[in-house]
Image (cartoon, rainbow, N blue to C red; front, side, top):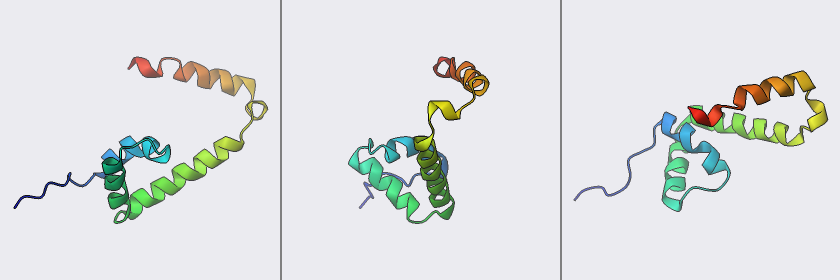
Length: 84
């Protein structure tokens, strides 16, 4: 009898889908794979906690909190982000 379950996620695969996981945008089976990985990987648990902290801090950031030169530099850096 073969195991029909999807293979365990690697840490790299988890990182690739973590945004969708946090936005509750994963299909149920993929979400279960993420949660299965998180149940046994302390490094990914720590990474998830860091991402949640970062998101929480960024949610409190206002436009006026970022100096215009820094904002301009960020906009320039990300302008071609999807071109890759």
